[in-house]
Amino acid sequence: MVAQNNAMVIQAQFADAKAAALLTLAGLAALRGPLPEGPLLADLLGVALHALLAATILLCLWAVMPRYPSIRAGNGAGDRFTWTGLIRDDWSAEAHVDFAREGGFDELLRAVALSNHGASRVLLRKFRIMRVAFLFAIAAVVLMILQTVV
Image: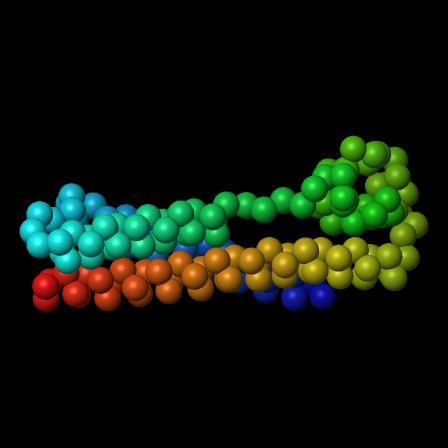
């Protein structure tokens, strides 16, 4: 379970790296200049291209932005292992020490499972957002190609 948690953390970092790379490419494409002057079709393609690039940039920023669960929600009053349990308002050092000293293996497994569940939900959201961002980026590339032809 701990290895599973580490693998999800690595996947989240990989998703953030992909978002940063796509953000850089979309930003460079958007900075290639103002909208071209010319026929109406070229103007519409330019506006659509910049709209897709702006949406791609915003999606990449959204994917990289950290997501924290509600502090009040936590994983329950007995959660003293996961970081969401450690930031609760009712957390106490004494209870944490008692848990570390007297906590059973079942409680530890439950806490790791809850942590894995939270990490997997964040990872799923990141990859869904990145899928949409990549689709927008592909559409932007198609529009760039069309702009050079028109």
